[in-house]
Image (cartoon, rainbow, N blue to C red; front, side, top):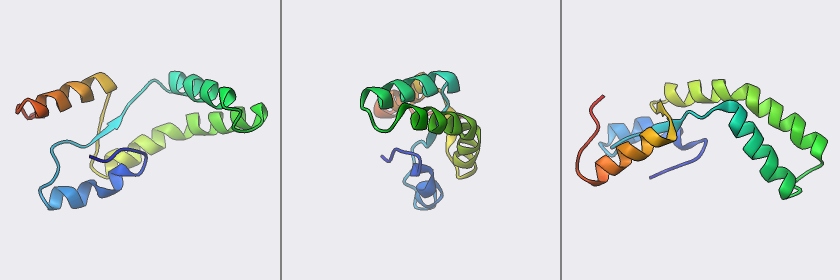
Length: 98
């Protein structure tokens, strides 16, 4: 299992080696992600609020390109609930069939 923004980098090689049961890129509402990230960063006082706001807007705008890149590398875009259902199915021995 790998997670994070760079996890999609290994999908093709894992497929080649027969090691992939599923590869997913989370598709979340961008506005909700922006608000959650900003609230977390403000609470943790990571940087000045102005910097956090500017960075948050940049990430908000970049998110579609990040998702396109991840899917281009072999990950399937899916909402969190769908990913959880698929992983539960894999653990139960019922692989997902697209």
